[in-house]
Length: 209
Image 1 (cartoon, rainbow, N blue to C red):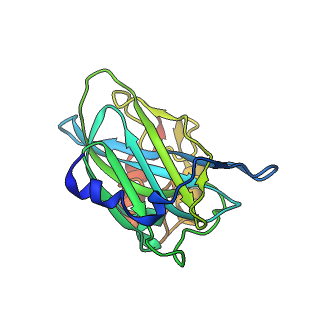
Image 2: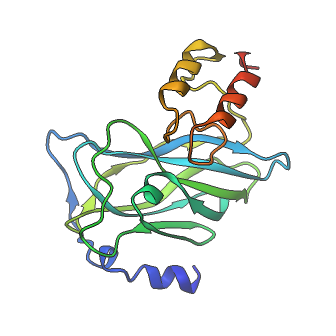
């Protein structure tokens, strides 16, 4: 871990994390997962969306590692929208507010937390979220479900937003409903759903290969 990350880990939101975990009874659990992703033509570099869903709480900081790849940058998503400070090393991504006034509010369904740019490090490993630490505005650690994986050697079907194996009017309706925002329809991973994403969808129209 480089010196920048080591220093950022001293930010109070992480130093104050207790050993106890927030377990909210009947409240919905927090979930960290994956959204869209893609590899470039070289087959090694790419990007992926890390998603966040917590309808019952406010997120003030996060830290996670990603297996099987080297992180080259993090950007966009809710973290950028709500002015989180973002930093990364080759294996670790961090986002935080240094004051209790800042947070990501409760979500209404899965949303893109941050976009990770990467280079694959291994030839046969699944991409997994590991060493996940998330904190609320009381500097309490959050119990987070993070069991999703990505097989980077099985390319997703471009434009199939609802995952039914077909790019059709249903996917087009979803994209138009998210126009100008962030969400699953961000097919090029730039943090905004716009004409570029529509072009990708229309170019993939029909059954998935």
